[in-house]
Image (cartoon, rainbow, N blue to C red; front, side, top):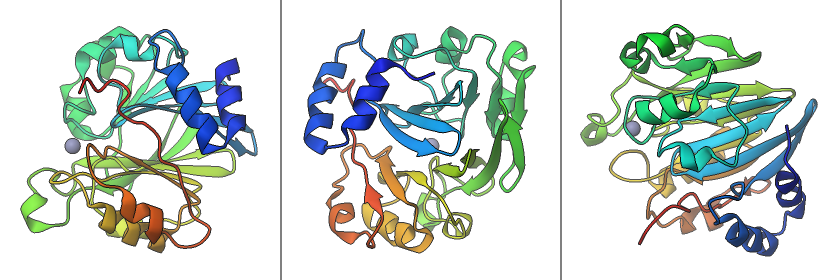
Length: 256
Ligand SMILES: [Zn+2]
């Protein structure tokens, strides 16, 4: 399903128009800012929600990723047809939000989150380990290792716990990295059309680490997300030719 607002924002393209629309979308009753990307099976509509939370509309599916922050953030979106959760930290996994919005949607999680789900949600959830592949809502998914690699940061995201996900949406692959530094599995990715990458210390990577990784696995479009107050200017100047940077407002609910 594609809303009229999604269409308008997606076709607008120009940064100045996007920021104008973004102001309109700041109203709680409006749909969140969205972008559109063409695939072999219709348009993919991307909704940045907040920090690590996003929603993807494609082929009559509505995929929520790491939904947190309460039902109001999702009030203007269609109900999810599937929910993906990368790991158990509170800015990615929030049971009250899931209870409020999940409806009958199936869930795809890492093992740790799966083990923490109440029985009703667990009954329609599947867990993937790093490196495993599966399917949710008819969408092929690969679980990509998401963890810190810098010694003093390993306590935040140890190896073997969190997932990133590569979703195959028609002929386009979308990579949602979760909380991670550049891992061998990330750097080995190829043919990624759209990548969502986190960059905040001490939990994930620096923008400079992100630039280095991006220039190795070369996604077509990069969305920095989960960046807090990081200075993202390294991405403005550091990306290899042909890689599109899409900076969006991932903190529309910030109070300060
Ligand atoms: Zn985390």
